[in-house]
Length: 467
Image (cartoon, rainbow, N blue to C red; front, side):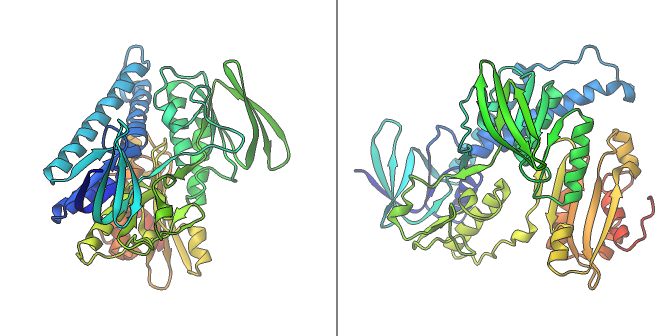
């Protein structure tokens, strides 16, 4: 069996793995990436974040074209060309994947296609696509194998009528009716895409509100916006049975009040969460520990096995691409003894790219109160924003959660136009431990959407000017 020695072997090339590899190359570590796919980038690039946002952009443009007349732009027949939209998505993904490959090559990182498995004693066993096996020895190993779509015990995706987020990205036609099971970020984004593509969309969420990880006020605003778009939303509702009947999926659901719903659609999208990919990677050959389906690590992403790190969706930290990337950098810098600082997971931005967009960072109002803070909030609606009126997008608001004693900003929550871009200012504010008063004294250009953040900061002190 062929054996090669490295400073670092990374299993998985998603946003955690490839970013870790680039930083390792920059720091002079002899690094090898093992990836089972014939391309680099992992789920985020090929089956998640990037292709989904490409289709969301198509949906945005489609809606803008339909609404053009009110802005003085009169279009002819506006229709979706799904084949062209899929081609655009593919071009974006291919370009980005080749970019990752170039960056690894530039930083002298080797990569091997195959399935990597921990073999003990700082060894990774790699099974190549042709069935051959080789071994790579490494002083350190990073597990970055990500996650896969989850099923329910009584509903399994078949790739035809019952589909998951991988399958829906490859649909050749828009289903007349789409039933989305799960009101989290994935479900809400695909609901938003296909409603504007022309599907009659129904969302069913087990918990009492959609986007249950967000501040309740954001969830309520998105729920209202979806209903105005003609999307049916059922919350506090459990799907108990789903069966394929010819070209239709028929579901039986029960609400919290005990009412039975009979739902049907041409496609059922399972958006019920993801499952960590650590089975088959050789955890059993190490001292690494697994608790409740996640690998246990310390603040530097070290497992209990010397020299073995784990990042991204394998951990109990937020399952977000940008978290995995930061963990990859953290782990590599710890390996290189570059004195890294642990990640503050209370300052992780969360973004949902449905319409209206949703973004947040820090504590929600209920969590802040539960933590014992004397909470003060400022809420500024986009309906009072000149720039939002110019854009014709007045849905939503900026909400700042602050505390009274030191005027500390505890959280910022945005629903509305460009929310996923506006959150960057809040990220800097929390990282810099700014107070609401310091945001008030920060001059914001006019007319911009960013002014809503300034006004919400004014609102924390009860002094909003334009509302």
